[in-house]
Length: 481
Ligand code: NAD
Image (cartoon, rainbow, N blue to C red; front, side, top):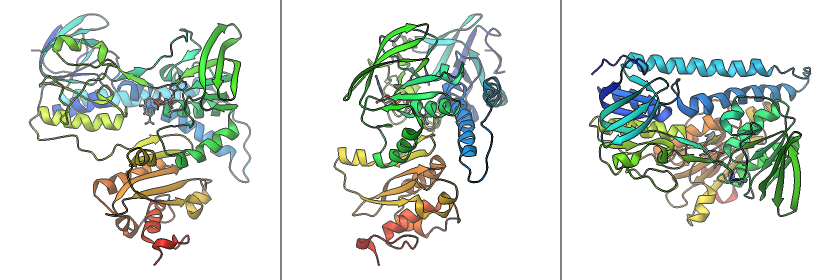
């Protein structure tokens, strides 16, 4: 057995290890690092050179870098009494800045792997038996014999049948490469990726059309949270087509021709580029799982129990491949459970909620019960909404269209859910997550002193609404007193 030196593939052909982790995204590297810290010999396998998976290399981090650029451009243009020239955009420099952020983060991960003695193997891994994995690397292949495995192989963008392979048709990965800023961009899918990419390309000068087959942008989020964003986008974008399907017509020198079919009828349009953002599908079908006896369903998901164990007791799975929501913070939490269980700890995945965030402008974040879910499951709740006009900080900073709401159990008075739309909503929602995990009631939030003037006060004020103690607005009649 070679030493765990973190050396790249090519240095060794065969490895034997206590734990192999397949996939080095946020789930995979967290599992590998945690298990190494708990004393296991760990091999981490990924087909890409840099660690960090889609999130770090082609997803969360590059999109946040570009969204920051987009936000600064928008905010600079909206400052009262300050007039900047129209921004001059150097796409090559913007791209290079984003790539520097990725490189800095991936270098950090490689250093952490080295310091922990985690062996990193670059190559595409497939199971060949219940305790072996074949890894086809760029230069050679190797066999890894393992006692335990964690599958963290993630997901890939869904493609739309009939849309051809054309460099002008992008998915989130190619769109984040910023190949070029098109004059007219069609985004198919008004979910989180579609909306985040729309904000980036809009700020960089493209005219945006969004096609969403459902009747609302971000169909998983409550309508009141989406409304402030939808209003801002409607004022800026060329078209937002809800309840609409896109059919590809042809690819020509002048652009990509599509037919958009909605309730109002059908139109044909030509776009310079198209971004497909209609969801992601799990990669469970591509890893030779059958050779290990691991069951994969028809869609590519791998079922696990609360300890993240597959039907094969020494093989675990985490992250996008085990089910929705496909979110990095779910994967890292599951990673800690799987690594802990493998290392003999008594752990289960028992989080009460997995928060969701759309890093749009304004940001939208929610956790716990949504009103959509409450209606679907006939759950009774009381709703308390604090409009951000009541927040001095929000009004000062051009965020008066935001809101913070709490959903409360009418009997126990416990917090059931929360939603926020406005600046930093993704950061603010963490307090509500803690409140839910701690079984807090609105009084706990209202009586904790929140710094003034901050956006965080809006959560305390929504709680004061529920308590009937609010002074920055009139309290609701039925709870005033
Ligand atoms: P999504 O499921 O969030 O949104 C896809 C959207 O496309 C939906 O609104 C759906 O109704 C629509 N759609 C599907 N087929 C369509 C069609 N043929 N025509 C028009 N519209 C269609 O998926 P996504 O935005 O692609 O994101 C993929 C995954 O990645 C999700 O699980 C998401 O949560 C995750 N992700 C999360 C973040 C974040 O946390 N900020 C960011 C990016 C991606």
